Image (cartoon, rainbow, N blue to C red; front, top):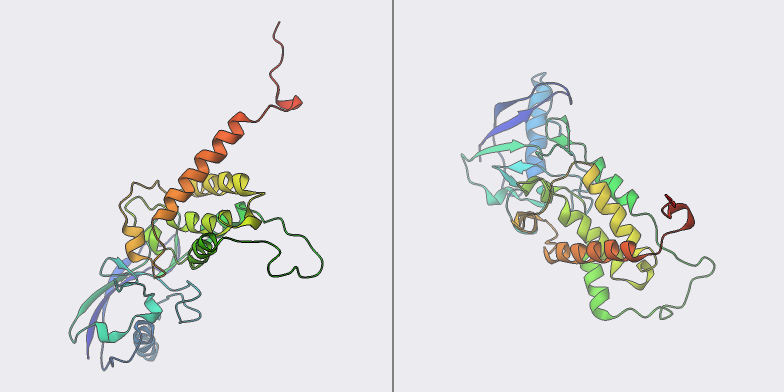
Length: 262
């Protein structure tokens, strides 16, 4: 089948960008979407034109590297599917597709369909580490974890940090990503010692990076390739209120005590 593509082209971060149109021919239904772009780039290279830059690694929906908007929908709109898993059998001969990068000020464009998602890394770094004893491996049943907590943490850990939630949100919020990473550790016994500080630090880092606020549109959950539930945002908000209240109730240290103004 043949397709007509309208792709955002931008040579570098500070350069102006524009949409350019291309046609790809002889695409088979068994190809993945990225393989279709590989075919386009082979044709562009043969003609001496710069290939379309897009990010990828595992091409198995695990790493979270790939991702862009297809006709305005993150990852193309197939439920629980990343771009690299998107099969060309979902499209028809003669389809016109518009491809553009994630649109968020916290995700500056590097080139074409590639954006800088290092803001996610800085949010994770702000979370710090968990307390774990060193030495020999503990017994598997040394720390009892309730099944519900284990299942919830496992579901949260499925987040691959692709950024689709930010791209789909009208506010460019990173709440689904941040809440998944927080829920992963905050639900487990190993994550309790730093729970409050982790929550406050990651929420502050998210704000510093310029992400917007959640207004419960639910678009993030709809496009998430790992189907992370929006209820994790509620978990994060509860933990944030809990941490802020506990900090407010903590006694002041000597250095923080108000001075006697008499």
